[in-house]
Amino acid sequence: MKIIETIEALRQELKPYRNQTIGFVPTMGYLHEGHLSLVRRASQECDIVVMSIFVNPLQFGPNEDLDRYPRDLPRDAALAEQAGVDFLFHPSVEEMYPNPTLTQIVVSKVTEPLCGASRPGHFTGVATVVGKLFHIVMPDRAYFGLKDAQQVAVIQQMVEDLNFPVTIVPCDIVREPDGLAMSSRNVYLSPEERKQAVILSQALFAAKKGLEEGEWSTADEVNRFVREMILTQPLAEIDYVETLAYPSLQPVDELKGQKVIVAVAVRFGKTRLIDNILHAGEE
Ligand SMILES: Nc1ncnc2c1ncn2[C@@H]1O[C@H](COP(=O)(O)OP(=O)(O)OP(=O)(O)O)[C@@H](O)[C@H]1O
Ligand SMILES: CC(C)(CO)[C@@H](O)C(=O)[O-]
Ligand code: BAL
Image (tube, rainbow, N blue to C red; front, side, top):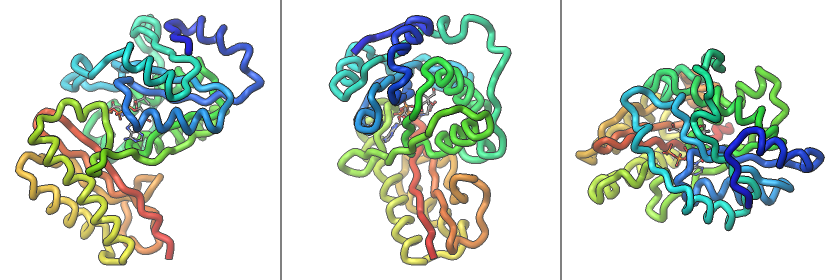
């Protein structure tokens, strides 16, 4: 595996592979099994796998965790190589943003609810950096985790609207043995917060079962059920619990026959965790 720090060097390295299938896994690093599952899928489906590790300042709000976001390049490089990455792109902030960013990619509508409402400007930062990375890597296929299901919807919208020649591959959420969705931010949790955080997946799995059994007819009923279950944990502070159509992320009235997402964002102390389940909603 080669570690590459400049855009020009990566372009040169990838030149000989342009007639092969290039898979791309964009990340912010501090790798865990969730990221590595994307790499394994990419190496099964592509000839060459490129991973980026870049903590993108543009997608963090002023009071968010940009400075303390966990970073460990030597550990990440070893894990990435073992999982099958061929090129690890690790640019500096100056390399990615040498000038003040006067041009940004704004995706509307799907960015309005959920994390878009709680983190103003977040998805403009995500779409802009992913757009730049797509131009740099020019992948055939790009792999994204459904833990960030709204991000998948935003990137799919951007790719469709701006004609990026890339196939977006959404990948299943990888979980800890007790159900907690893997996240680089889980390292922030105190032992007590970690114990209580398992309520997110428990509430979502219970919601999925209820949806499959036709227990509720409206989104509000699902939201109330999930909310009440999460609030049994004293350290949980809910940011949002929402049931929306997926991938449009528009409100749903009747649940019957709808593909929906039940998405949550919950704070435990200073740590904000997200998780979701998708329900196919066939009649
Ligand atoms: N548990 C997971 N299962 C599947 N994919 C995941 C998981 N966690 C992250 N990913 C995916 O890995 C890619 C890079 O994500 P990122 O580096 O932000 O990791 P992260 O662990 O989600 O970090 P954080 O939770 O702190 O945002 C994204 O496409 C994301 O959806
Ligand atoms: C896609 C991404 C790498 C863009 O910075 C980031 O939002 C992430 O890690 O999910
Ligand atoms: N996984 C999404 C990146 C972020 O939280 O900024």
